[in-house]
Length: 249
Length: 153
Image (cartoon, rainbow over all chains, first blue to last red):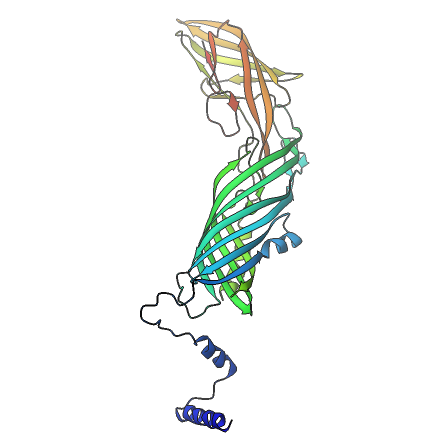
């Protein structure tokens, strides 16, 4: 104990002698993060072990928007593994639904305004993909800045009701229903994601990505308004806000 | 910082939407009148009847004319009163065209609602002026540009 006290005093004296103050808590934390050597030993390619962890995450943005404003949502959970902090395969599964009513009604030549509904019950989707960390030997093991490529597959069934078709010569046709439409959609997502640790085992992050549809079947009577996991069928940009939990670290 | 940037980007993503319908909803049957006999068409008066409804029109051009089938029915009759010239003499003739088709709604999107798809099943015509009638494309769609019917005279 006396030796420790002596060392503390001597190190403090040394710091003070160099014109530096005693480290405050944030500086100590920063020092702790620097425990990992910046330079890797000769011949060592990776700083992190082969299997470097596993995390699960859920997208919290879509459910929140669904609760307050949106009439459609995808509920998604994702599992991501970490190999060497460099290669991060991921797989996600979720369910999506829509019960959307046309916002302002449609103004037809007849002057009538009609609102129609696109209803898709809870339907499944899955995604598999791969993320890559360019800064894989970073000294910050808990934060990730990734690029990723994902493949998505979804199935949903929809009923569109109370549609009207306006014709200036023959008058308005309706109400029309398009029932039991079954759609299967495949797409790819390419983008970037960020994961930042906010507490032990818990991180927050977001994904921003471009979406490109590969195929969509069942569109003889039109494309769906909403695809589970993909979002609005005409959208090309996706965004997720994720809450992560590190299962293995 | 990165998290903050992401959250700030959300409104931009979701507000970049357009509420107006910019798609064509009306599906027209595109017809062409082609002379194979040396006659020259001068004018066509059209009477279009379907069930108890009808409309009249005067066609002033004879290539790629848009005609509307009745979406509430599966049968439309067109009576075409044609004025044409043949070796400098003027004639009039009338032909009746019967068109049988199926009608199916097609969903466009939340802004536009729906359009209809017509599929021509059968076309019959009297042959006073028209010598031949060809179904070139049986599907009539809102954004289609293919000629559906060709009247040869």
